[in-house]
Picture 1 (tube, rainbow, N blue to C red):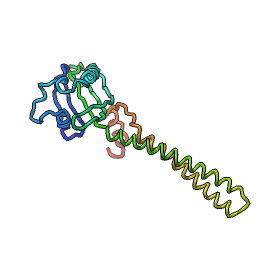
Picture 2: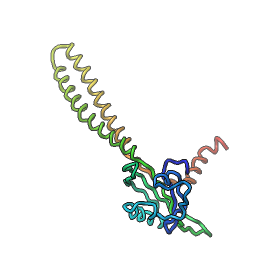
Picture 3: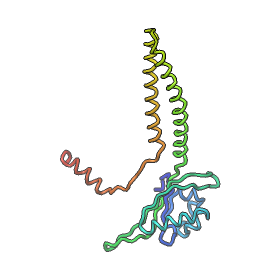
Picture 4: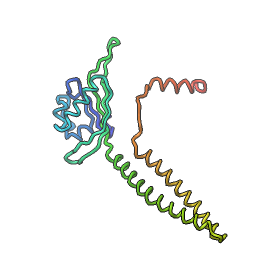
Length: 207
């Protein structure tokens, strides 16, 4: 956790900090030697962000996993985009589950979002310029292919084939860009069931 590049912290039901890793402390300007456990979210999070953070933390205290993206402006690092996730900090006693606090994980996705934006821009340029140009080339080649000159017809057929191949490649690139620029959809996974399923699949070969 201390070595993670994500900002990770935990608070109790009164929004008092239970823990914060090095990245979280560094981002919020908290000295490594300082005791964060005596502080609250309102002490650490700036006024503009606190109301929104407190609302999502309240949802997690109700037992819900929360996920959202937000922009935060840092005095030294500028405006950054974060993928924010809050998880209920659950405690089980005598079969009863209670939520004692919230664990928060903030991942800086600024660079990945910028790369996705650049991909979309390049894709739009390629789609517009390349496809338009190759469509014209293919059309003119088809006109030439209707002539009586055998050599010209053969050359035109070759141009048409290459144009078709380039247009096909352009379409594939477009689909790849869509996949790379859109964040993947995720869903919760029951780890124990997954492990049991994998173990059962290999049990016969490796008893």
